[in-house]
Image (cartoon, rainbow over all chains, first blue to last red; front, side):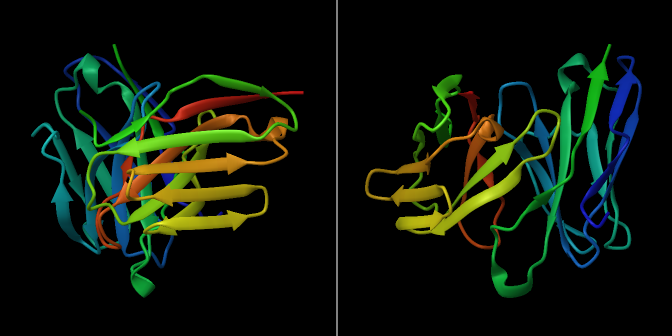
Length: 116
Length: 111
């Protein structure tokens, strides 16, 4: 499978715990994005990387959220001290910068987080 | 006010009907316009994209952009039950900027 891979697919945690999600983008893609989606809403932008550099982070993103892409390949998204409002689908997407086209963004199947 | 507005539906039509899905937006700086389809418990997949105003056709799908009205549309001809999904409009300011999504319209095609 050469698509965007996200793990785990589901995560149930108790309020106050820390959680970490992993995303493996398509191998030749140098741009990686994290989005959050709640039921009945479209994906909401969280942050994105070009290679290992984090280029933009949403102002809506609490400082409990942190993302890394240490070697410009896979990425992790960590949420500290989880709250019930963090319950959502966390989507990762990637694209290549080649040609400067923005439209071909490939999404993974997401990690569904439930905070009890 | 959200930057991108989309009627959440649900929209239910009989098989074979023409479906019209629409979005409005507030910021005239948007240049790239996209439509994504999302099945339950899956990530969105790109259906159509257009740059600036105009029409684009791909099989049974036609995307239209009217920048003067800040209005975009997706038409689906000869709709099939397999088209049942949530359709998300999306747009961005430039080829390098983040993509901003509408809230999605849930579509159901009745056999």
